[in-house]
View 1: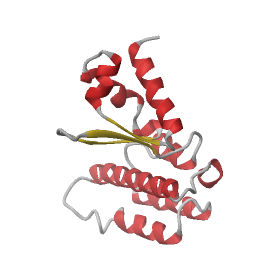
View 2: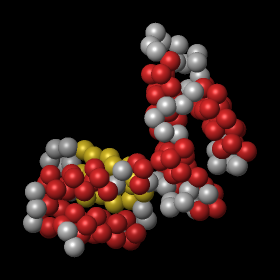
View 3: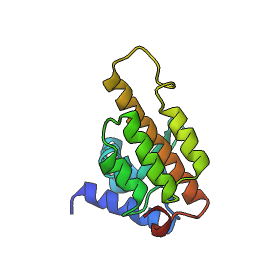
View 4: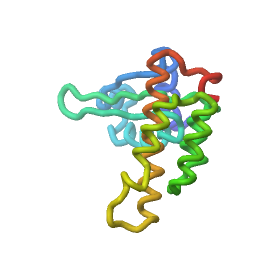
Length: 165
């Protein structure tokens, strides 16, 4: 087994034991595996991505840490949307349709839907840039909001395959 695989497996085991959130110190982890901290960075950047259902938070400095949060379950509706359906750009019409589907499936509340629609509306993005860039901003914004919803549902203890599938 390659070192990258071993580090990934170690972190995923910790996540399974720690209720889907774990805080690590990069240097301590590098010392444990007898590797450079950049190897830890590589594993985090390639194996714990948003598309894989993880959010990485870090704080640098002496008391710094890396927090890995599993925000989306395997097979979840939100994970599918973020990694496969939304892509790199969305028109306002496509975004409104997706938000409507999420509301009808009770993945998000009507209030969350209204906020999402407002944030990605033509009015909110009425800046002098090409429409293609607005569509890219719209997709990134929607992905970010969905991650926030997934994290909130997880914090409430409501994230299960049934709630997000």
